[in-house]
Image (tube, rainbow, N blue to C red; front, side):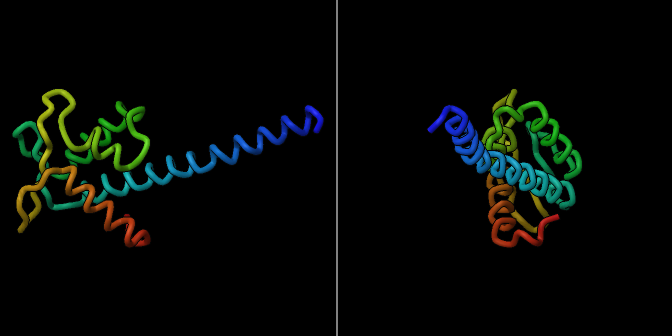
Length: 125
């Protein structure tokens, strides 16, 4: 093979390897946006560092953390584990309390919503 064909072949191979990564990143962005919108529309109370916040404030706070910590997020699960489950300053876990339900760690609540989203992808937003 000549040098030109080898270069084209390398580009095709590299592009083929990167395509699934970018598709995964896009999927994570859509899932995270959906989870945060779901949280913001809920009637739940978000408990952060012992203080209660409404759902819209919770969504705003987690979106701010996502903007600042995007480099730590490669999947929806990594967003939940690294940014949405606890305070990065105090290390205290976040909780969510929804009407008629027990107080739950926010990470668990988000993972449950993620499972539901993946089971029924057409029902998001």
